[in-house]
Amino acid sequence: MSDAKPAKIEVQGLRKSFGSKLVLDGIDLSIGQSESVVVIGGSGTGKSVLAKCILGLLIADGGSIKIDGAEMVGTGARERERVMRKFGMLFQGSALFDSLPVWENVAFGLIQGHGKNRHEAKEIAIEKLAAVGLGAEVGELRPAELSGGMQKRVALARAICAEPEIIIFDEPTTGLDPIMGDVINDLILKCVHELGATALSITHDMASARKISDRIAMIYRGKIIWSGPTASIDRSGNPYVEQFIHGSAEGPIQMEVRAT
Amino acid sequence: MSVLLDFLAAIGAATLRLLAASGRFGLFAVAAVSHCVRPPIYPRLIGRQLVDIGYYSLPVVGLTALFTGMVLALQTYTGFSNFAAESAVPTVVLLSVTRELGPVIAGLMVAGRIGAAIAAEIGTMRVTDQIDALTTLSTNPYKYLVVPRLLAGTIVMPMLVFVADIIGVFGGFLVGSYRLRFNPSVYIQRTADYLQTNDVTAGLVKAAVFGFVVALMGCYFGYNSRGGAQGVGAATTYAVVSASILILLLDYVLTAILFVGR
Image (tube, rainbow over all chains, first blue to last red; front, side, top):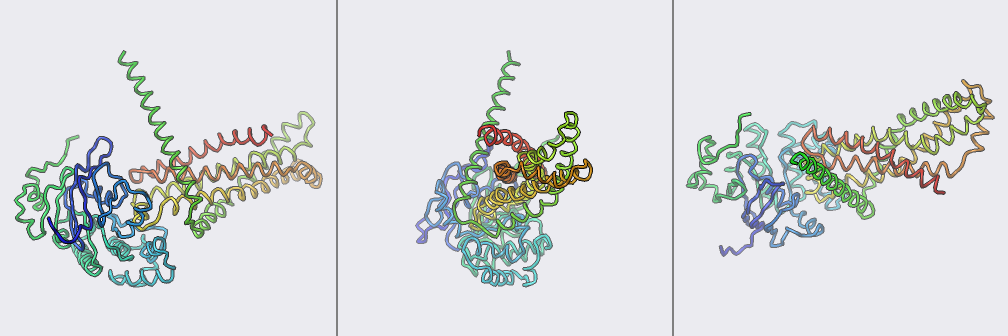
């Protein structure tokens, strides 16, 4: 572990509970500069909670999260706000602002967070919309007028608009048909490589995970139970990972299904 | 014995929940107010809220004030005529509308129209991750969502109530002149004689407090809504009910301070 480059994101012993329910039970995860890591795992295993803790949207109960070596757990609001400028985020449900036109959604971070004037920010937003395959005319529409796939593209354009150093993708292909899902995967690859950004993706879509990641980590019962290069996932030798990637009901992972 | 213990435990749990909820609300209110006096402030958003809360509430508040003034004139006349005190109708209408009914009726109408809208809008933003998205885009949700609504509510409610006062008194004048056969010039003269600046300004102070309360309750319940459409619906109900109760409660407190205490 004597890498020359320090990790861009370093998570150690991260714990988070909601009431008596322990969701993250000592997560360890390190993501290098310009590396793309996908965290896989079943529904309700804490993947999104991990992403939200890294972003500071949820406050961790314990452990450490370092961004570029700077500790984030217990940090003041001002320092956190400064570090947040390094992040871009694509939410599972896109989370576009209904009340604003598409271009203003994309340019929001530039106008509010970086103080750019609206005219300049709109030009950049239209460039970013073009980068995800959407024309300038789409910029004048409202999010409700777009299809699910178009909303995801707009959300991706918004996530990359301020050219962040770190991008987090929460279930980027959920709810999309396989072809549109692959289009989004290609766009993620293109955008991340062009920016040279570090990427952390959360998904249970294995096709997406294989395509966009350099490395895959699997979360189960609040812990990272396996991590390795994407190419080696089929030879992981871990029965949990094997069951998950084959989507089998038989195996060590037992779904909590109760008869009512 | 176990029934008694269960009963005491239930009371204890309810008390703890109440204290926790009061604490959460107190922290939210302090944070919201503290953000009102710290930059950045978003004038464009405040302007939009001034129009939404003020301009678009004018028809409903105006109509309510008009009928309140008209009913008040009729009821006062019916009651006071038993004591040959009909001449007091303009004075009673004026004092009731400016001191009490103008701010309270407008406050309740705005609580229904605006408190519900604020809670539903912010609540929907909460359950669809739009508030989290604001944070990831380096924008403080308090400053972007809560502060404009609080400031606009506090600024625009006195203006609405001022208009409601005029319309309410005019409603009384209409009924007094055309239904109760008052001489219009005498009615206006008596209204002008008893018009006190203090009565109007006290009503406007009440209005500012009510505007703040309506916006605060809408923001609080919307911001803390959970659980999809049902959670947003519940937030909307809580916002309207709590704002309405607080308006009536604060009306008593403010009346005691502004009128009885002076």
